[in-house]
Length: 216
Image 1 (cartoon, helix red, strand yellow):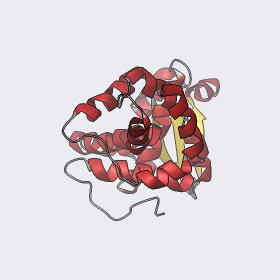
Image 2 (cartoon, one colour; image 1 turned 60 degrees about the horizontal axis):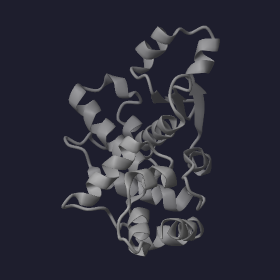
Image 3 (cartoon, one colour; image 1 turned 180 degrees about the vertical axis):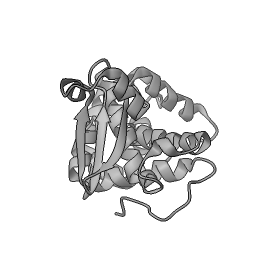
Image 4 (cartoon, one colour; image 1 turned 60 degrees about the vertical axis):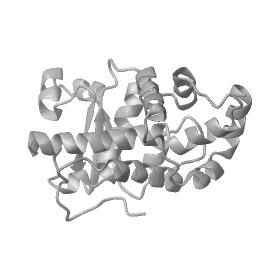
């Protein structure tokens, strides 16, 4: 699987389907078949050098919080190119675990979608360019953590043919807000994706069986 896309122009509008399908491809190739999905396990399996740093480590090194926020322009996290690879910096001080999981998936999205190949730093882009890439990374993160084909799978096995936001939250360890967004997509005309549903079902057959029994 090609992890980075180089020598391309920043799209004028977000590539929603592309970002979501890249998340599924990443999950199939580098996931371990366990739910909730471990972002760090996927990062470990990727053929790319990705390191971590945390806000708490930066503070211990003498850098102030205002300097961190000024450098990375985010209270959640950021990703930068470093030492022939990438470094994901994230806020481990005052963010809940579900938010940290989303931040890690979001920053991984920037890497997999090739966003840092444009400039090496996302902060020098125009406001519109930045918003486009942020939207794509959000789409990637959402699909990586709560893959729509797996939700379709659960729905098909449910006698009631219904799933609630709190169930999605519990199964995939995401925030209730994120789970509610999934429900909105379920109810929309577009619906949710069946992209590579069969491959995902095979990879996650064991936890899916347990979920069928739990929500039957």
